[in-house]
Length: 319
Image (tube, rainbow, N blue to C red):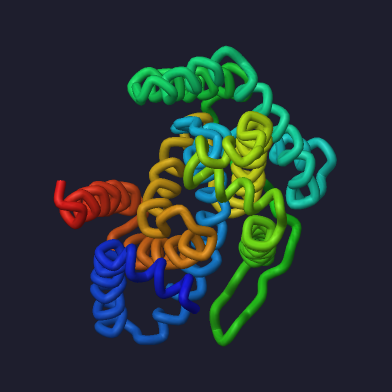
């Protein structure tokens, strides 16, 4: 409880902004039909859990591996494509290929971190020059976009689902959305327990707080950093598989998910519990926006929220 209260205190302005958006949607809902509230909250929770899982990989890449992975959105889409083609080829639900997608993305993440790109990124951070690291990550983002476009064209796709539809208190929920959310929540709990209670998890948390101090007490920051970046890209692949069972995607959808992960990161402040709370809040906001303004305003207002969160956090720090 104290940890949760600490998260809330540190993110008071972010929570206030999210609460304002939700309150406006709540009032609009009462004006139209109070019963819609159940739908928005339920769908917001389901979507938010998947956003939270994707943001955990984004957070791990930045805090532990010190890799400015602004290409995390493209890794999510790559995981979606892997699951999509396997699902089409074998004619079964893509959910069964989640472990394979995670394994492929883990190997890609480790290879990237050990490649010259990783060495250049590490050197840029050691010299406190974030600019070159951002340029490297942006180049990787463009490279992955064009690679996926050349391999699979620009056509928008969605993973076929093979499930039923459930009715919870009048809320119609497809099995694909429900099972994707349950998998995301299960993995979030496992990640939280691993970081909280295991020896390696505590070492990872130590690296995220102070890499030099962690290295001075005998923690192999290089090896753990490599493994963590592999895990970060693996969670990206898993979240890509889960999200693509719900939403359509194409090679250029990565930026949309990167924006969502950035909002969850700013709201949750580098915490698994915070990421889940932030993901649910953002998911509810998206539900309201989609219903009352339309899908095209969803991304625009998401961008406005992203800028507002950065501005408020900078103001509260006195900068």
